[in-house]
Figure 1 (tube, rainbow, N blue to C red):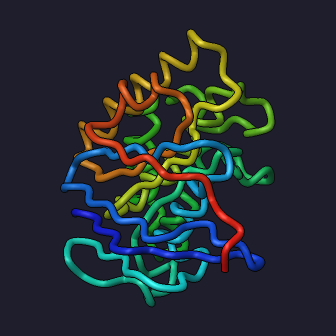
Figure 2: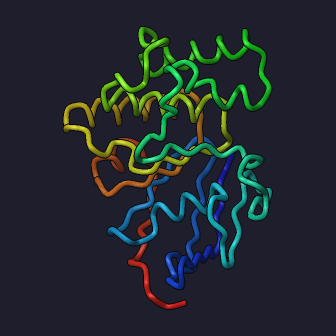
Length: 213
């Protein structure tokens, strides 16, 4: 599925965060949104996902305007910078959460969770408490959870923050491979040029936000 954003503008608390932002991502490709701190990178992802209202502009998935479509009906996955795993659920239940919401039966959920655990190389962590995971393992669980419902578009918000360089490079290579193997259309937010080079096929650069309404 392709993603097209046209002339998007977002104002939060009287501050113009995004102004006239446009982008296009072809099916199965990854675009990196880059820019300095405060340039609205995370806000862009949240607007695409429908988590913040837009002042103007449109968001379209595969040519269909979803600007006014509720978040849960957009089929857009989001991997948060801080993972936001559910602490009361183990690894498998975290990954299968969205599938339970969609009403999948238990056998189908288990098969999909097992498939994703293998993809992110965590098959031996299936029943583990998420509080005991390393930083890299937690990020892989968050990725698998976002991919579980086969979203039409996946959004990744600084997915490798806080990792040391060897683990960072290992995880970025794994994410690139998973996105490629699954044919997932994605937008990556990162301040690290290495992430852009490793994962994205194209990029846009966001200017600093302004105080203008």
